[in-house]
Image (spheres, one colour):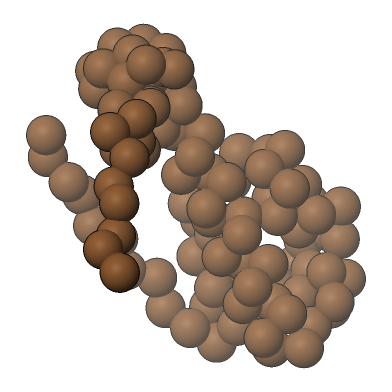
Length: 103
């Protein structure tokens, strides 16, 4: 049986262009920044759960509060780089590596 490909399908990139404008536009850049913050919160939550830690236990290990960890995980708070490094190092015993993509 042949697969039928709908001509109405669009790429996710096209969808973003339509919803938020092309890359470089103000609205699109705001979306991209929010999405990166969201991904960071999800990553921390996944690492915490994999480590079998509660938000309170993670907060205690890295010298912050449960409510701050919750705000990070729920994308309700910007996180400072120094705090992120402390969470990764003290909370999870890991290290943080960063990369920069030039456009």
